[in-house]
Image (tube, rainbow, N blue to C red; front, top):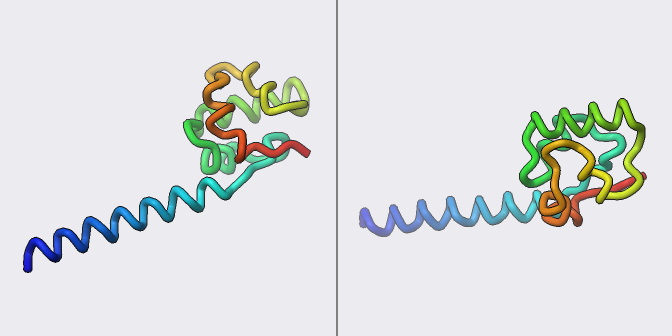
Length: 91
């Protein structure tokens, strides 16, 4: 019975994690309008510090013309952009 409960707990945790990841994949964010908190929440591999750098770069330099323009922000490389391409919107 203990093994059954452990297995059930593991499966429920795994299903919850997969569901959370699926929800995150379906989210997108406008990198020209989003707050640092929204960017950090939506973009994979972008924490609050990098998100704040994106917002600050945008404030100083204006809107991003393309997702690739994010690479001008210190700490944001092309791999981060590629990993988030489906989440990045520009309006």
